[in-house]
Length: 248
Image 1 (tube, rainbow, N blue to C red):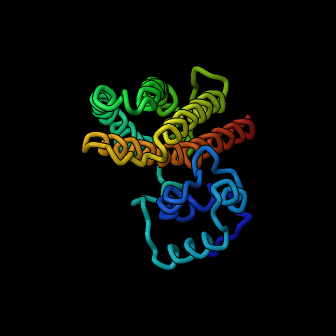
Image 2: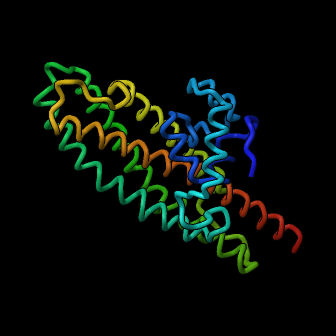
C-alpha cells in the first residue's frame, strides 16, 4: 500500500492502524481533525511531509498493527463492545485515580506552579463531559447501531429509534468529541506538553505521564468512533432506507 500527501489522515489511520502511534508521537490529529489531507496536517504540526511518508512506508513494510480486529468489516456490536470494554472502562478507572493525583500535586506544588490549578479545573470539566457522553452512547446510540447492523446482516427492516435519523445523535457525539479535544489540548498546553518541570516529585511526574496516556487513549477512542463506527452506522441506515423504499 502506498500513501501520499493528498490522502486524509483518517484514511491512513484506517488503512494502517499502526500509524496511530506515529501520529500521536508527532502531534498529528487523526481523530477530530482526521479529515485534513496529510500535507495540511503536517504543516499544522510542523512535520516534514516527506519524512512522515517514509516513516509510514516503513511501518507498512513492517506489518505492524495496533488493532487485532479489522474494524471496518467487523460487526458493529463487536466494535461498540470493544469501545466500551477498552476505552469507556479505561476512562472510568483513570478519572478517580488522576483526580486523586491532581489533588495531591496541587496541594504540594500549586503555589510554585499555578498552572496546576488550571489543569485540575480543565480535567474536571473533561471528566464531566466524558462521563455524560459515554452514558448517552451506551444507553441510546450504541444499542441502535447494533440493531442497524443486525438488520443489515439479516435483510431485516430498519429499526425504529427515538430520533428521525441516526445522523442526529452522531452529530451530537461528534460535537462532544470536539469539546473533549479542545479540553485535552488546553491541558497539554498548560502542562507544557506534559513535560514535568525540574523540581517535579515522583507524584508530579506520574500525574503528567497519566494525563498524557489519558489523552492518547482518548485520541484512539475518538478515532474509532469518528472515523469507523459512526460513518459505518450512517451508511447502514442509508442502505436500509434504500432497501425499504425499493420494497414499497
